[in-house]
Amino acid sequence: MRISRYIPILSLFLFLSCNKDKSGKDGNSVNDTVLLADNYEVSFPKLTGKFLSSNKNYVENFYNKKYNPKDFSGGFLVAKNGQVIYENYSGYAYKEKGEKITAETPIHIASVSKMMTAVCVLKLVDEGKIDLDKTVQTYLPTFPHEVTTVRMLLNHRSGLRNYAYFTDDKGVWDKHKTLTNQDVLDILATKPIGLESKPGTRFGYCNTNYALLALIIEKVTEKKYATVMNEMIFKPLGMKNTFVFDNLEKKDDVSQSYKNNYLRLAFEFLDQVYGDKNIYSTPRDMLKFDIATYSDEFLSKKIKAEMFKGYSYETKGQRNYGLGIRMLEFETGQKYFFHNGWWHGNTSSLVTLRKENVTIISLSNKYTHKTYQTKKLAPHFGDYPFKFNDEVIGAE
Image (cartoon, rainbow, N blue to C red; front, top):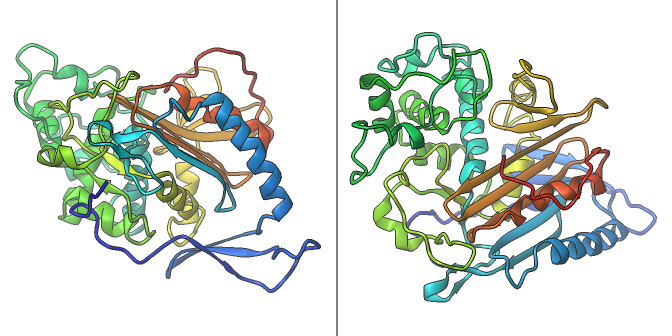
């Protein structure tokens, strides 16, 4: 599917290049550097042929059993140390046109978009353009809640209501009109929307937080969110098949969204709000993004420490949320980092096993819970004490 009107032609690709001239017993180099762009590099040991072969067989068997490629519409990829162990693509990007999904087909990644929005904000923090603990009003003066900070938007502790819900309130919004990010802010500023909870007191996952973060990005850079994401993340990392969808007039140029029986779902009035969703990408591009987060040049060590820690301990349990990343914290000290997504028929999952340098990605544009089976691969690569049965693993 051609989408060149959205994506500039890029020459930066993820590739592997020998960093040191050392060899293992099987003749494979034992050191490698993942080069993302001129300014970013991450050193990982090169995987042996034996490791790649045995794990490819394991993951492929897992995929065939859990996903059924004859029915799954999307992309699936597993990598370690930036090297792809296994990937598979099946189904249709636009079934009515006969356009099949390939490794280069961008799919709506739903709430996994929040990870990329968060990283953009954190890069701006590194540059001194945003302060995590400044109030939202510092950047968006019409925002009505005085104590809410940027950090509270990132870690979902703002107490805000979800715009997808409060636009259902009587007299709040005419659903014949397309909602924008600025509209979300204007509604909060002029309507009695109220809060779900006092800011900073508890976790409450809310898309409104990330719609506002996109506006903050635009305010401090004086550029459109899509332009900033392209300049700061997509282009530098060679994510040549990734873009922000922010124009409903181009809806026939992107991969479509389907029910589980391939009944195409229509775009609606909420489909132009971005930051919380509306990034289209591929598993290969998302791998580049994940690997970049290991680079201290891409994100400083200090800001990564803020990103990959939990902020919500008011209730006991393993579940927590960092800055744009979900996590499970086990009594063993091990942490499982991930983000899932669901929007219309699109479901998505990105798992980043930081201790093992493993990336697991699954995207689908035909509604299914199979996407979230990614969690079941984690114990194969590390000491993640999950106990599975045949229950459905949900998006959240």
